[in-house]
Length: 507
Figure 1 (cartoon, rainbow, N blue to C red):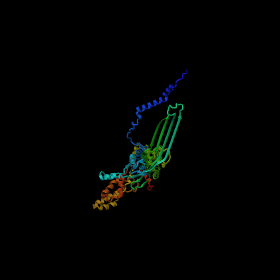
Figure 2: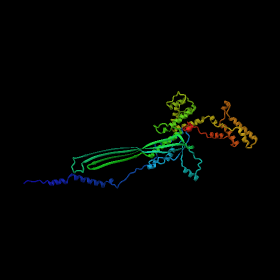
Figure 3: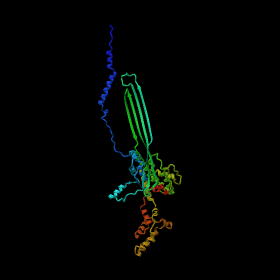
Figure 4: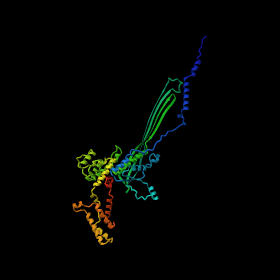
């Protein structure tokens, strides 16, 4: 009898314990365990961590330059700049149409910038409503209020969006099939990899215009303006990484969007423009505070060149000696190009030729522009002012106040007062002697002994007291006020000496 082997039970056993079912069971159990035990993938447990930040002072590229400009006005001994600003706004209308992408009103930025300078820059706010309300309440009579000298006008004049728009895209994908796997082992025999990189960028430009006006005439001051532009960018980047394993997909995706601050850009433009406006008006080398790559302002250089052309040789030498003293060189302030002055000039200006008999315009400008900006230089400037005031000749002061009441004008005035004849004659004689005493001398010896203002002042005061001040010529009164309020001597040309070269009527 032939024995037939029963292979069915063996085949059934192999089918019941196939690896595909075994692995499927493990995967289902692992997935269920992960869902139950891991709360990080629970959609209901969503949290966002926000980092806490502390308040900080606003710092820009010109934060340190602004007070240094104020120090520069003190070292260069400029006139006080009493400046007021109109309301400065966005004149393009883009602030409203773009949802305040740029600021609508930048007046407060200008106030902060001008007030940060200090020195001889005095900012005067413009607020008519506040002044009117204070007048109604009677809190102030406004007698001691400072009147501005110049007024600032301007605004945001350009905001161009989408000047340049660029986009880049990279997409790479790989896919392969693994045929060696059993047919029912996994849902798919394919594996794949995908990488994507996309970037987009846009360019915009903001421009601010400023002009300086004369407060008395409300006319623009020629060449004292500032027009500055700044480009701002906006970019978006997206990256993706995807993996496909036997029908299962896994992926990572990241997106970032960066926008350069429009409001911060406007603040930088305001600070730069205010430094330019103040520097041009006061004729000081403000560009030294803007960085090593900043170029000299041709308006200031032109003003210095024109000012040099109006000076005599002795005056130019005296000014250069004052500036050299601020540098730290103890040179005499006598207006002579002596050996000490030549040595100091050679140390300051490498191109100076000691054999020259005069100071050229190039040397004059170079010494002025490169005066040190430091507290030590400010102290030297004050020391130099003390020395100059000590050696200032008395004849210069006397020449400003030689107007005296003539004797011929005194007698009629006294007669109108019904005074006794003897007193009229005595006062007339005293006034006549005063007039003779201060009149120009006819000989060199008398000219050298001409009395100074301190000797003339009692005579003039006596004449004023006798006449009750009625017949004192108005010119003499003005001279008295001018001499009495004579300012302290300062080093170097003031804005009234240089800055006026910026107006056409004073050329």
